[in-house]
Length: 364
Ligand code: ASP
Image 1 (tube, protein in one colour):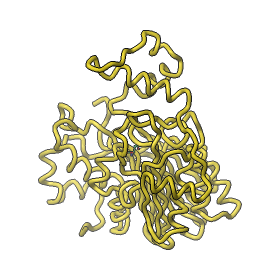
Image 2 (cartoon, rainbow, N blue to C red; image 1 turned 180 degrees about the vertical axis):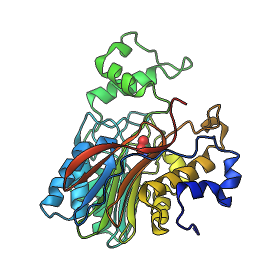
Image 3 (cartoon, rainbow, N blue to C red; image 1 turned 45 degrees about the vertical axis):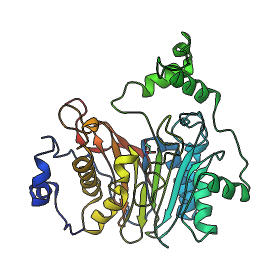
Image 4 (cartoon, helix red, strand yellow; image 1 turned 135 degrees about the vertical axis):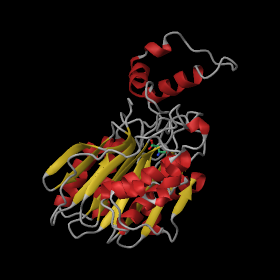
């Protein structure tokens, strides 16, 4: 990439964006989030997705106790992975179309530029810990499917059932109402089940096909940068489908001296644009964290909204992607394609939820 540091106003006036501008909606100027968190002078900074409030608290305590930043980050996301009520991550995650929970996770250590990842891993509630072992105990980066499972077993992880009673009912409801052309019949009572009802209320009305993930990046007091991303992926996915989350450069990227970034949202859009790496490259080129996230989102909007089924009648993406990042100076940001997103920041002062910057207003 040859980008130089540019403000948002300058960015929209560049030749690079002139061609794309014709394709982009008028409101693509983006919206800054206010106020951006102040950089921590000598302290640590945590940035995580909206579902990471408890994770940030745990990571914060670990950092206060002087723990290693990657251990702190993993301990943080383990809270979401082990929480059966977070249906987007780990234990109790929404299964694939066959009712099997397949998990993806990756860790990256910006001190060593080493990473570890697992994908389509079954039976382990905390795939982030297995990803860490891939980094620490092998000379490889990425293990998938049956190989990842055998690796986890070799390291003492039991093969557990990750489908909860709640997610089994939700999956069966989805399966029963998929089509009139198969053998499955929706029971009249299904949608009245409180678990199914709550799920449909939370995830059934949005603009987008439901999915979810947790990303958590840490910039330690020493300035070290690490990240972890973990997910159960797209709800009811095709077995074996892997999104962006465990892919280094897409779902996360951390490099000492530059920054750490991660993503949630439509993995396919982020995979083909290597989003987290793009965010960190923009940091390297001098952009502030929020600007770096917005510019990577603009790249996604330019490149992936061209497919008609991914566009609304105004040409805007019919999906969402969120980025979270912290730079080497400890400045944190969160931004999304669509307004209404949130992210969480933790530092020596505490933990707080903030509004993400955005490119498109949801109700416009
Ligand atoms: N990015 C995840 C995936 O595509 C899902 C999400 O974050 O919502 O698997």
